[in-house]
Length: 192
Figure 1 (cartoon, rainbow, N blue to C red):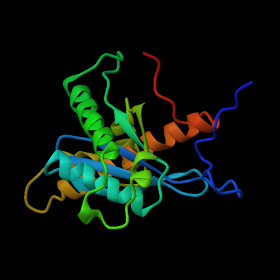
Figure 2 (tube, rainbow, N blue to C red):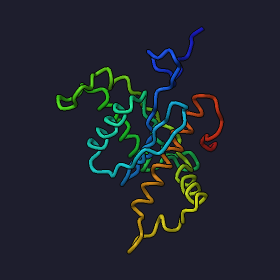
Figure 3 (tube, one colour):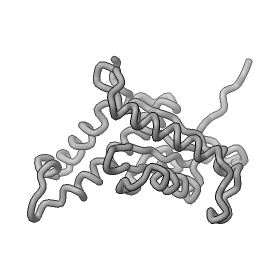
Figure 4 (cartoon, rainbow, N blue to C red):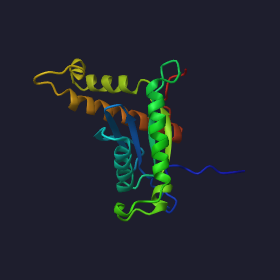
């Protein structure tokens, strides 16, 4: 009988301390980033303003290496019906390019990153349907005005708030994946 490796356990850690994972909500203008802690709980980390795909991917790999991540969970943007969208294709291309970058030997300028550090990173796609809706609901529940998330103009901080929504969406994506891996049922994607 084959045993399945626990994705939360570091290969050389006998204390069963879970390795952190990065969660990504990849959008056209921003990438929300979340990080799991030692308890397997996802937390907002930061927002990356998109520039060039390769530069964005290198930033993500630096974050994963800095935090000693086991892997990266990327939100898969499907329609509520489960069908692919144009954004689904963009995210899949981004993930394919990220995986190709992980497989490449590190550049001379990348410091102490070994090829093993990079190739050991795993990338998973996870259904992100409703994560942004849930992020907006979470902001409303904490007293933030959701109407101002989409408005711009003098005095509005929509870029800041959008960044928070992106981080929360990444957190929900990552927590859903973590829960599914551990057998907890809290944040699962809807049935198609």
